[in-house]
Amino acid sequence: MQYRRSWPFVVTSLAAGCGDNIKLTPDGGDVDAMPDAPVAVAPKLEVIDLPFPIDLTPSGDIALMQDIDPDGTFHFYDTATGTLTAKGTVGDPSRNMVTGISQNRLVTALYGEPVQAGLWTESGGWTYVPSPYNNSKGDCASEIGATWDVTAAGSTVVGALWNGCIVEAFTHAPGAAAATKLQTIGVPFPGMAAPNNRATKVADNGMLIGGFAMTFEVDRWPALWRPDGSGFLLEGQPEGTPGEVMAVSPAGTMAAGYWGAGNAFYWTEAGGAVNLGTLANHPDELTFVNAIAADDQLLFGRAGQPPFVIPDAFVWSPAGGMRKLQDVVTAAGLVVPEGYQLTNVLSASTDGTVVAGTAMNADFNQVSFILRLPASAYGL
Image (cartoon, rainbow, N blue to C red; front, side, top):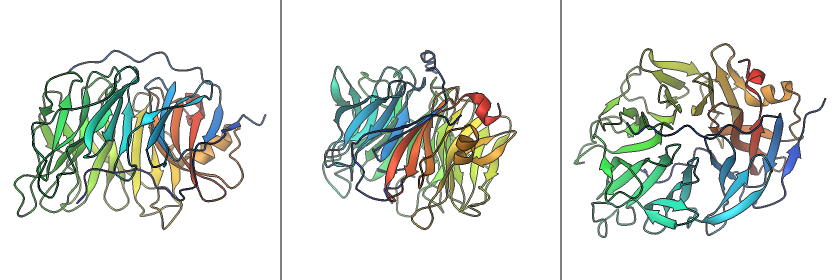
């Protein structure tokens, strides 16, 4: 079982690196402060020759990206000017990765060796979430912690700490003396002292935390926690159906992810878990929701499971249902380069007008894209 690294995308070639950008224009609890005003929206699709688009700031002004080079170099991409700037390194990319960025540019990560729950700022460099456990010996000595997400203001981060080989979900205020353990939920596998839990996503205002917990049949089942640390498993699928919360809305009013062999889902307090199904051209294939935007009216993600197929990025709205993002892009008058396919969306600005994702280029290499579209292009 692996709870350290979980890329929500695939590297189809290691050839991608830092290169020129292709810029395309049209053919014809602790409640955080609101993010800065969104960047101006003029329809634009930009392709960046880096394989991993990790996250966007809530306003969409900065995209956090990572390279596949041996040091795990990460970059800030200014979505208004198209400027790409290397900011630091996270470590061996086979074990380390940046995971999130706040509006004030605090970066979360799986950092260093042994793997720590890393925090990075431009002024202070790397620090990490202090762990109460001694993982210097045993089978899991190389795993100490991981931070997976951060609130808009950078006041709270979430992730997992290793207590021996048991994974515990936590929340933490950067600078505090210790992390706060979230309630352990679920059922351990036979022979384990406790079930593994991981906090993967947090609302921009800190009011909802999502991730997964172990049950007696599967190692991942969708789970949510409140700001007070109490948690619960979602209901709505048969026992033995694996799933995970992979997105939480900025206001903490919705969670979403995947659940089952081919089903994306979203959850609300009033309606519980709702099955979104799959794209028509990817029936019964894994479908993931990775981002929620526009007051819970837009869901973005990926349909299809590489390497067996080339996946498609999708957008879902209440009126339009699930659609290929590439079809929406071309309908808006933007040109996708010949031979390119938009394969996944990893992050969206709060208002949904800026999204970051992956694409397959004509040489079957994974690259990143930044898309800017007004809400009207999605039918809102």
